[in-house]
Amino acid sequence: MDILVQTEDGPRAIEIETGKSDAKANVEKSEMAGVPVTLVATEREAFRSIKRQFGEHANLVCVLEEIDWDRLLRHILPGEYKLHDSA
Image (cartoon, rainbow, N blue to C red; front, side):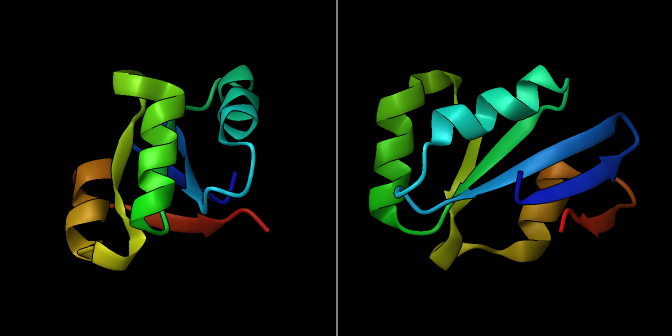
């Protein structure tokens, strides 16, 4: 997982996908740990690749180059939120 956030409902992983990594494996690791995942694509081609891999089941929010960060955080973390770097 690239970013781990703590919400009122518990942790949530945010995977930032470039289209070059194994998105399915990354999502499966987080899900096996019991952590729900939100995918963020870095560009349009990565967005399309994730859509092909996951179909409508992807919790895919946006393309990084088009992000309105405030809107993204409100979507993922309603109410107050704290960011934690997983590194």
